[in-house]
Amino acid sequence: MTELEKLAVQIRIAAMECFKWRGFGHVGGSLSIVDTLAALYGRLMTYDAKNPQWNGRDYLVMSKGHCGPGLYAALAVEGFFPREWLKTLNEPHTKLPSHCDKNLTPGIDMTTGSLGQGASLAAGMALGLKLDGQSNRVFCILGDGECDEGQVWEMVLFAAARQLSHLTVFVDYNRKQLDGSTDDVLPLGDLREKFAAFGWYAVEVHGNRPDEIAAAVENGFQNNNTRPMAVILNTTKGCGVDFIESMEMNHHITLTQAQADAAIAKLEGRLLND
Ligand SMILES: Cc1ncc(C[n+]2csc(CCOP(=O)(O)OP(=O)(O)O)c2C)c(N)n1
Ligand SMILES: [Mg+2]
Image 1: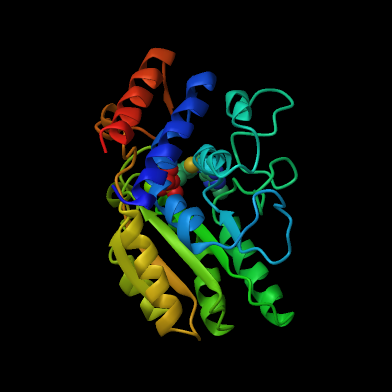
Image 2: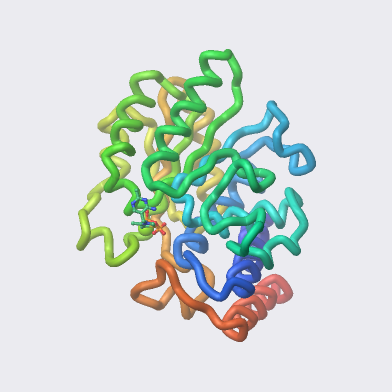
């Protein structure tokens, strides 16, 4: 395994720990985005885990805010806060609510949960930085179901018009949303083509291969300095945990501690056997 692949396994282990103590949650969408989080925190983003508010950092907006637990797992692995916190997901007075809250969690840059809003917020952050002459990058993660929101397409128009070249948007194209497949609910078609037609630098990658994701983004940084970048991630919802991957509906599921422990043991085995 490559370093980024190992990091992705570590993040999946931490995510399963987090869900294990709560017993339920948005497991599918948290797991499908882990490889992007490994690419971001392992290679692409500039940050200081000991000083999360450092103003030289890059920003991440988890616009599909229900996948907060996937991001908390990455932040715990990177040392933004003690790993013990993962046991408190969504409990009263927790610092790790089910959806992202920038006022509660070190390393969370934007409060999200109402789908579509994070897209506009990320574009606003990128515009603000640009107006201030700052070079910090803003990354944003959207769900494919989230792309049903009109607000997303307003942002796509706006970011291209304002040449927000320091904005990179990932779309987790896992083909599933809350209660069905995206093709059944509202087909999105070729998302790469759509972003390109709106004036974006747009690429499509295997979204569960962290090195491929990182290379595509770095390539974009080198070859484009006027357009915002869209990275369409072809992913599997629930990726990395077999029994969750194979569920038809794995958006919000219950999980016993034994199931979580078995998944964690299997993931730990992958690290040991490497
Ligand atoms: C504005 C808004 N409408 C509805 C919801 C309820 N909701 C939470 S997750 C979800 C489905 C999202 O699907 P997708 O974007 O594909 O996420 P993923 O597959 O990555 O979990 C919905 C409808 C919401 N959070 N915000
Ligand atoms: Mg989806």
